Image (cartoon, rainbow, N blue to C red):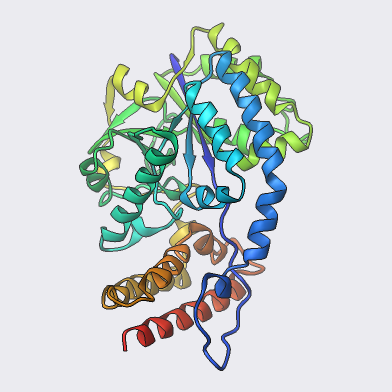
Length: 376
C-alpha cells in the first residue's frame, strides 16, 4: 500500500415539517414545508463543535495529513448565520486542504431521466466553492456516493477528472477497492470497512477493536495489497466521536506519522489519479451503486413514485420560468430532492417510513398546486 486519500462530507440537511395543507392554500414559502426554527437552532448548537474540530484538523494537516472536503451547498447556505465557519474552512484550504464538487442540494437529481437538473446543481456548487474558497474543484463526489453509468459522461464533460463513489460488492467482486479505476473517467472507491471504522465504530466501546489508535489503523493499511485506500466519512461523525471523548482528534493528528512509518503518504484524490496506474473495471460502465446500497434510495415503490413526482415537477417548472414565483418554487423543489428524504422512506425505516411518505407526498401535492396557480 502506497497512499491514503481522506475525504470528509460536511452536510446538515433541511428538516421537513410534519405538514398538513391549509384549506385556504396560502402562499407557498420555504418555512411552510421546512422547519426553519429547528434548522437554525441545530446549526447554532453545532457551530462551536465545527470550529473546534477544524482546529484539530489544522493540527493534523500541519503533521502531514491531506483532506478533501465535500461541503454541501445547503450547509454553505446555513453558514451565513456564522461566517466564522466559512473562515475556518478557508484556513484549512490555505493550509493545503481541497474541496470536491457535488449536487448543490445534496440531491438525487442524478437519478432523474434527464440530466439537466443534475448538471445545473453541480455547476451551482462548483461556482459557490470557487467564490467562497477561490478553489476550482476537479474531484466529483455525488450525493450518497451514488454512481450510475449515465452521469459519469456528464461529469467528464463538465471538466472533472476524478470521481469518488462507493466501493460496494457489485462494483468490486474480489478484494477491496485499493486502486484508481478506469471507466469513463478515473474513479476512486470508498473503502467501506476502514471508512466505517472511523465513521461509526470509532467511539463504540463494545467494538472488538476499541480503542482504535493511529498505529493500529496504519498497520491494517500497510498489510493490504494495492495502491491507494480511499476513506470517506462524515464531519458529523467526527463531532459525535469528539463529544464522546473518544480521542478522535488525537487519532487524526497521529495518523500521518503512523502511516509514514510504513512509507504511506496521505494525498489528495487528484494526486492519486495522476501518479498511480489506472486499473480497468468494467462494472463502472454497467453497474450502479450508492452508500450502503442503491436499494436504500430506490428500493421500494414509494421511493420510485417520489422520483417520478420530482421529474413531473421539473417539467411543470419549465412552463413557469417567466413567473415571479418561479425562483421561490424552484428553490423549494430542489430542497425536496435531498437524499435524506428518500432514505427516510426506505424499507429499513420500518417505524416511520410510511408516515414520512404520507407527509412528503402532501407537500408534493401542495407544491404542484402552487406551480399550477403560478402559471395562470
